[in-house]
Image (cartoon, rainbow, N blue to C red; front, side):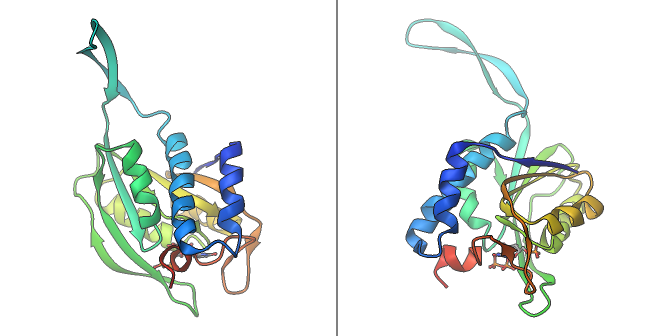
Length: 206
Ligand code: PRP
Ligand code: URA
C-alpha cells in the first residue's frame, strides 16, 4: 500500500488551527475545507487528461481535460467535511456515500448506510474520511468499494495513525492513502494522539 503524507507549509499551517482544542465548529469547518483542498490537489496530481481544442477570445488553442471517471465517496459523517473541497477541484466527480460508525466502547465499525454508484471498474474512487485510527472503518469501506468492482481506491485523510496504516497494509494492500499528517499513536480509547479529537463532533458541533 502506498502512503503519501502531503508535505506543504500550508498544510502545516491549517493543521495547527485544526488541532487547537479552542477552535470552534464554524472555524473548524472552514479549516477542514482548506486542508481537504490541499490533500485533494496532491491526490489528483497523476489523473490522466486528454487533448482538446477551444477558442480563446483571440485564437484557437490546445487544452487538456480530465479523461478518467472519478467517484468520490465520503464516509458519513466526518467525510462530509471534505466533500465540498473535493467537488470544487473535481466538479465532474460522481458521488456515493457510506455510513459507518465506530462503537464507542469497542471502536469496531458498523455499516449503516450505502449508496454508491455501481460498476466502479473504470473509475478512480476517492474515499473521503478525515481520520484513519484503527483502520477498521477504512478497511470496511474499501472492501465495500472493491465488491462494487473498484480497482483504484485512494483514501484521503487529514490525520492518520501508524496503527491504521499498518492495518490497511494487510487489509487493503492495493489502496493508496493520502494524508495531511501521520501522527504518533492511538490512546486506550483508540483516539489518535496528538490528533484533533473527534472530527465529526467538532465539524458538526455535537
Ligand atoms: C470516525 C472517522 C472514521 C473512523 C476512524 O468516525 O470519521 O470513520 O472514526 O476510526 P477507525 O479507523 O478506528 O475505524 P466515527 O465512527 O466517529 O463516526 P462519525 O464520523 O459519524 O463521527
Ligand atoms: N475518529 C475521530 O474522529 N478521531 C480519532 O482520533 C479517532 C477516530
